[in-house]
Length: 370
Picture 1: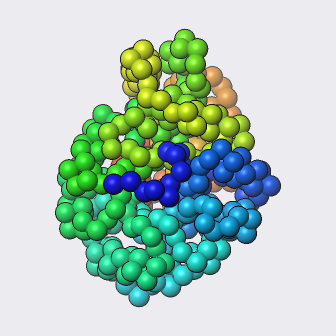
Picture 2: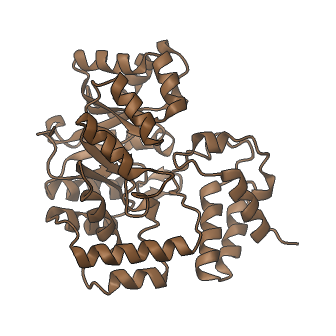
């Protein structure tokens, strides 16, 4: 299946927008939008849980108010944290339309689906309500984003064959990772005839900020940037028709756009270089956190989990004192790793299914030595 209204193969993910303190930098985001649309792309992906609702309102201010509705495509999502009953779904949807300043969504996703969330969504008739909204013309295409085992995806698509597409986390580190099951999920999508949208092609920036011994395999190619190779690798997986990238500044946007305007799959030499990067990264035993920040919303101790994981990864990669310094910065106003009470809310929310509580113990052991 193809979506004719999608221009080219590259979508603008709006989870990591340019910020000025706690607010979205609307001026820079507007410039990024202008350059992205001028390059011939047109797909924007948001969710109400992104940036505490500020992603949706930034869409309204920088896109919906500045461009004709038919000139762009907008995807939004129904997120688990925002409803508890069947009756809450439709009013929430209307609030999303208002926040984004649009009268309909081109794409609407059941967000972060997995075994547990799927049961709740079924109980609340979320899938059925989305299909009803589509029949009313308020949604054009209904699909889902997914974070679980391939067998669960097969169950969902078997029960709801009306789903038109699946959004998967795919990147060259995760494609054959047994925890993510990227390859197997692609195979399930192919079995059901569902096209794939890629999220996290640079793994939350981890495939951009490569340690020197991994980066050299990319620089030796004398071609694209680390982000460029990661995005091209993701775009080349079977069944993929579009790759999303969350871009935080103009430089990132220009780099990504330059790669995807004239996209070509990785050749054999480039694939080998990427394989070497995987080998190096796996040897470092790094925490595979993408900094999506879903884990922080419900933390009763207000621990900045992604940043603390970043400190430990940096310490393991570079062995320098800066990681200790930043650990102090990130815990000055938020909880320390040792203050985790083990409630497990973070692990229930984590799309990567990480053992966060154990990792926090590792962080505390490294940075809170007496």
